[in-house]
Structure formats: C-alpha cells, structure tokens
Image (cartoon, rainbow, N blue to C red; front, side, top):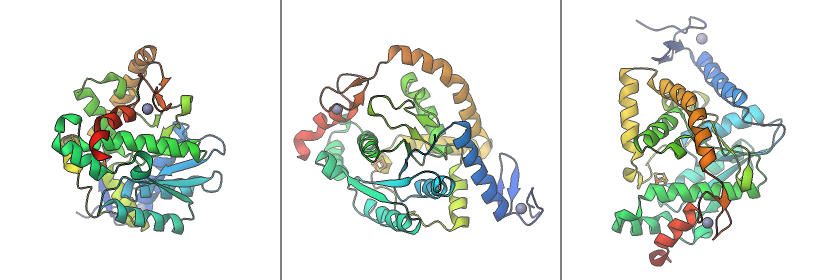
Amino acid sequence: MQKKCVQCGKKAVISLAYGPHAFCKEHFLFFFEKRVRRTVRENRMVRGQEKIVVAYSGGKDSSTALFLVKKIFGKSNPVEALLIDEGIPKYRGSALAIAKKNCKKWKVPCKVVSFKKEFGFTMVDVMRKTGAKKKLGSTCSFCGVLRRRTMNKHARAMGAGKLVTGHNLDDETQSILMNVFDADIARFSRLGPIVGEGGKLGFVPRIKPLCLCPEKEIVAFAAFVGIKYYGRQCCPFKWQAKRNDFRKMVQDFEGKYPGTMFSIVRFFEQAKPVLAKQESARREMKKCAECGEPCSGTLCGVCRFVVKIKGKVN
Ligand code: SF4
Ligand SMILES: [Zn+2]
Ligand SMILES: [Zn+2]
C-alpha cells in the first residue's frame, strides 16, 4: 500500500524504518534540518559569533554539512571552507572541482591546502611505501592522521572557533564499534559530537552537526535540495580500510533491526562520561618535541608516521 506522509497525509517519498516515519518531500526536509539544528543546539556546538570553518571534500556529507551550516549560521557567523588535496589522482581532483563550484555558488570563501606542500609527499607516495610494507600501517591510517593535522593547523590559521566535519550516524557507529573491538578506551572516549572541546594547546574543536543523520537520509536530503556533490569513483585506496568491514556489519544489523545505529549512539552517550573521566586523569596533553603541535606522548602521530615513511618518498 502506498505510504502517506505522517505530517500532512500527502503521498510519502521516503519511509524510515526505525520510526517508523514516512514523509513527503517538504516534511522530510523539515524533519532532517530540524534534527541538525537540535544536534547543534543541544551540544552547544557554536558559541557567539565565532568563525566556523567547514572541512570540505566535495562528497555528499561535507556538501550537506556546508550547505546547512551556511543556511543556519550564514547571517550570524563567518562561514568558510577548507579543502584538502591528499594527492590521489582521478579522485580528489574531481571532488575538489565540485567543492570549489559549490563554494562559489553558496558564497563561501575557501582555502585549498595539499599534503605535497605540507609534508613533501602525496598519498600515492605513501601508498607505494605502505603497499610494499604492510606492517607500516594502512594507507587510510596515514591519511587520517595527516588530514586531521592539516585541518587543525589551517583552521587555526584561518581563525576558526570551530571546525565542522561531515561525519554522519553511520560513521559514528562504525567508530564506536571499532574502538570497542580494539579495546581502545582512550579513542572511544574522544568520540562524540564535539571533539577537542576547550581548544587547549592549539586544538580547534571539531564539531559534527550530521552525527545523528543516517547516510541514506543525507543522500535523500542532498537529492531533494539539489545539492551537487562528488559521488562517482571512490578513493582507490579505500579497500584497505578496516572500516569497510564495520560498515557492512552495521548496515546488516540496521537492515534487520532498524534503529540499531541510534541504540549504539545511546549506549556511547551513557558510557562516555564514565570512561572519559578515567581517561583524562591518565592522559595529559603536551607539545610534540619535533613539531610543537599538540599530542599526548613525546612525538605526535604525524611525526612518528613521517619518520616511518620519509626515507623512500623524498
Ligand atoms: S579512503 Fe583512506 S586513503 Fe582514501 S581518502 Fe579516505 S582515508 Fe584517505
Ligand atoms: Zn507532508
Ligand atoms: Zn610532531
């Protein structure tokens, strides 16, 4: 039987099994945006008129995040975008071209920075090295550490009060489970809608306005609004990501038991305060002895990685 919108009774264009909810286009857009506004408000993600910098890749999540941040805060706060070029051919170039177009269309100033310029090597160089020696770590683990460093450094230079990332509900639940499977309480307790709150030691706090939005709904929202994003070929190195197995597992559970992802987040919200307290007592932030960026040991993750791969790539 044809489903009807739970709000107005018109023909539904989307049906969400976990509700269950069915919505017409107009009411789905309202429902989606309202959830993002509530996430931002309840977590006090944005304060005063601080500058908001969006880490923007040109994909569906960060395009939707930038669109909504500009819509919600564009009149009260400066909103800018930070684009990172990891040097991955046939992938990042096309995605960044779309990102630049959207920035122009939405009147968002943007800055582009590259791994090559920052570190002297690209992800292809890293792939050559780690592909040959798997024990050095996966391409994605290098990429993630280098990208977070680049984002933080440049967001700070841009005067950002907050750095927005496009993490969605699927990403969050995968990260929670990955840290449970790794028994990594320190990383587990650093997850959540705001990361690095307090802005101590040069950290620009990262906020995730889409962290309660399932990936499928972001795709639907972008399509209904007409947001153009890069959705073609995936990163060619993605197959290496352990995360892929977690993605599949979470999707299977969500398909069989709708609402599983929200339950995982609810579990996390209850567990985090207890574990975070224990962790913060153990963990003191310092400055990296090599580069001076914030870290918890003597050398930061970036300097440790750079030492590992430098020999061959330079
Ligand atoms: S899939 Fe891995 S290598 Fe590719 S951009 Fe993402 S983190 Fe980097
Ligand atoms: Zn409706
Ligand atoms: Zn360092």
